[in-house]
Every structure is written in C-alpha cells, then in structure tokens.
Length: 120
Image (cartoon, rainbow, N blue to C red; front, side, top):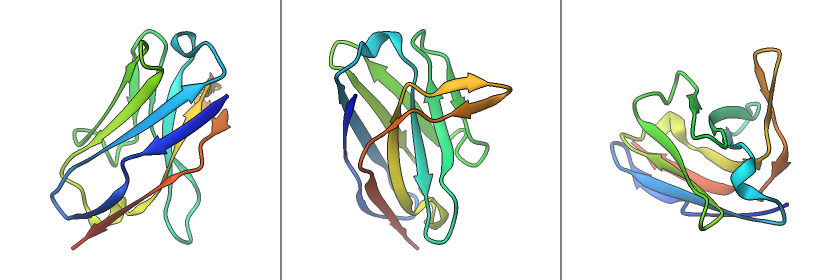
C-alpha cells in the first residue's frame, strides 16, 4: 500500500489544520486507518484510528480537539486538528491497516510523514 500525506505546516496555538492521506494499492474501504505522531526526542505515538465501519479511537491528549474521518470514494483519511497546542508539534504519519490486538493498536504500513509545527 502506498500512502501520501499532505496538509502539514506552521500554525499558531489555538489554530487548526487538516491532514489528508491518500491511499492506493489496497482495498481501502475494508481496512482500518490511523494517524501517529513523533515529536523530537520522543517515541512515535498513536493519535487516532478509524475502522472500516467508521468507529474511532483517540489518544487522551487529543480527545475533543482532533477528529479522524475517511472518504472511501476518494481512498482518503483525514485528521482535523483544532485548538492546536505547542505540544502537538510533531511529524504526523498516516498508517494503513493497523490491527487491534490485546487492547493495543499495532501499526501497519507507514506514509512518509508530514510536519506540524504549532507556535506559542
């Protein structure tokens, strides 16, 4: 599967960004999708997932601020990020076909990442 992310950039605290991830090479509508992020000096962490049926899951740190969605007709998954904080600064990675096992989401295929920088 190939993933191409877009939509990152520089935004002031309190602002919004929408990330997009276009997928190809798999049956998109049948697969879960996710977003992860990695801040400098930190481990990559799960931000949000969405199943093929549209069920969503969020990290506690982004609940109420971020929304993951998908458009199966466009083979695209989105991450709407509102009320951004400086601590949201990271490289955001799209992930295809994560799997849920033992109460954990295990990542699948990665995109190349897109930088999000939130200034204070």
